[in-house]
Amino acid sequence: MARTSKRHIEVKKQVESKKIERVYIAGVYARLSRDHKYDANRDLSNSINGQIAIAEDYVEDNSDITITEIYTDYEYSGTNFERPAFKEMMGDIRLGKINCIIVKDLSRLGREYLEVGDYIETVFPFLGVRFISANDKFDTAKEMSSGKPLEVILKNLINDMYAKDISNKIKSAKRIRMEQGLFVGSVPPYGYRVIKVEGGQKLELVSETAQIVKLMFKLTSEGLTVKQLTQELNRREFTPPMVHYKTGRLFRNEEDPKWTYGTVAKILRNEVYKGDMVQGIKSQNLAKGQKQKLVDENEYIVVLDTHEAIVDRDFFDSLQKERKQRKVNTGLMDVRTDFPIKKEKKYSNLLYCGHCGRPIPQFSYVMKRHGGIEDRYYKLECKKDNGDGIEPCRNQIYEDELDEVVLNSINHLLEYAKLNKEDIETANTQYFKTQFYYYEKELIKSNRDFNNMKDAFRLLYESFVKGKITKKEFLALKEDNKNIQKDISEKLHILDLKKIAINENYQTYLKEWQKLIDTRKIQNLTEDVLDNFIERITLRKDRQVKIDFLCKPDFEDSMRREVQR
Image (tube, rainbow, N blue to C red; front, top):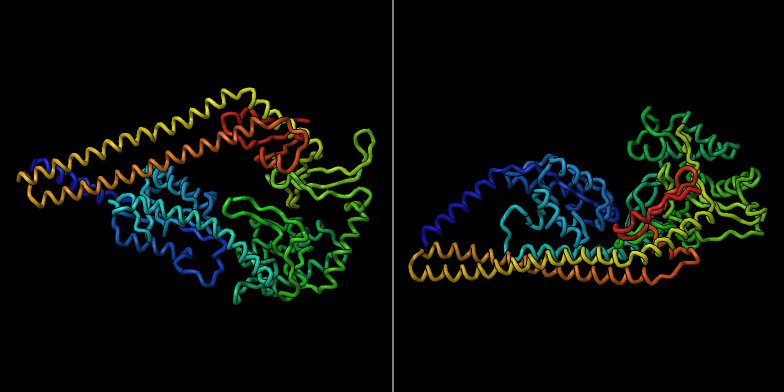
């Protein structure tokens, strides 16, 4: 028995020496959310540079790691993984450029505990990646201290709860700052810079670009259209707003993008240039990862005289009236009051242009259609034209025509689901059963391993009592056995949690599936119906409509239809 224990110790030392010899090529991942960017009281270690410094300090004490890449997601939430630098990092992992990831702490990786846990426990090990959370002293390549895996899971859970709680706190704090006339945002309007003040940030005039803004309003008052003004700005080679914000340059380089009609029009109608702050025009749920949506105009947060104006208030207001009258005179603005305009825009954030990829806006016109009947009709039309020589978008469809296509498709989905009810239910039930049985099998195996380790400890103790091994050997092997039992115990706990999660997901699926089956043929297409069934609609050339449904992959492909009208 003594010879067996020595052989065990020698093998263990050989394994440890091999671990030390391996060199890991590491990438540091740092993330800073938009909402903490201007927080004067934030912990400096949370800054991008602070996070990188912590990772570099960690590597100084670990000679088997070399940092070759830095990945930074600036102003991205941790509630989802739709982040460019994170995606780039995962791509480099698959290409074999790095095999180690270092973060300051787990919250930098993400705040959705289920997905973070899946990456740490499944994805990274599968890809052969070592994961290190410096401040948490968590390293997947080293022996874990007592209770560490469970501690990681609990910390991820806390991060998830924190993210959902902070979403409401952030929205409340933002609204308070907006109501105080403070600027809430990351990119200031063209002609201004952001300065920090007590409680937030304000806008300060920048003389060089402010002069260009004044010129834009002056030329517009002299009769230039948006198109003509855009051409004039490009002729003078001024840098457009985003290029100036990023580079500080006043004049364009040859490779820089040009001014666009949309950018010019947005500046000409922005009330910030008369000294007022108009904010809160969009809303979103950060914790649920919901996209931004426009709010009603009467819900905007407007505060007057919050900063130095670039154009006179009376001049600004009179120019807006003049521009509006120009549109009426040229037929570009509908002023008919006998056919009221509806407020509902049910395809907002659902319909996208197949040419440029942007959301398609809704327009309304009073005209004669359907046998010469005069009425107000709504058209979904992408008129994107940057004025940069690239072919403009001309994808368009009347709303009533799109309604017919979408309504028929949804009802076809319901019919398909009911006709193939048994096959779909069988496939999905089998999927959940396979997952459940996998973890059940792992539980049985882990329980067997746990019992074997308990039996091994009894044999170890008997060998010590009978004098077959020394006290030193007994204590060393006892500690090894104890640690292995703890690891197995923690694994059993995790497997139990996963079994519970699978069962809960299955129950949720059954409820949603039954709701789908019980839905009768839909007669009226409302915004709620669209939200429940449709993920995205793409309008292509010649009014081809591609619909992506919110349904499982088992039958989604059959429901993905292109309808040419």
